[in-house]
Image 1: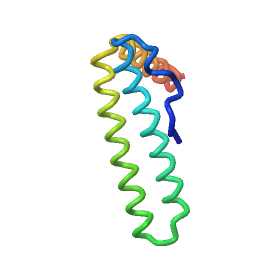
Image 2: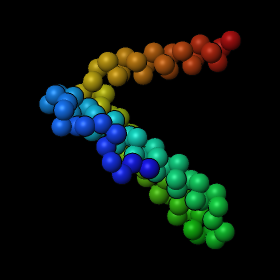
Image 3: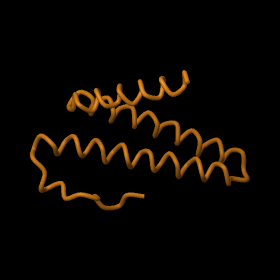
Length: 94
C-alpha cells in the first residue's frame, strides 16, 4: 500500500506532475482493489464480503476516472495502451 510517494514529485516538470499524480492514483486504486478483494475472500460474514466487493468495485471506477484523464494529458499513454491491447488480441488469435 502506498503511504508515501515513490518518486519526488517536486522535482518533476509542471507538465509531468499531473500525469504522475494520476499514475500514482491508479497505483493506489489498484492496490486498494486487491486489498478489498482479498479481504472479501477471507470474510466469514456474507454482508462483510458484499460490502468489501462493492467498495472494490467503486475503486475500479476510480481507476477509470484517473486513466481517462491521464489519456487526455498523455497521448503517448493512449498509443501504448492501444498497442498493448492489439498485442493481446494477436496472442488470443494464435
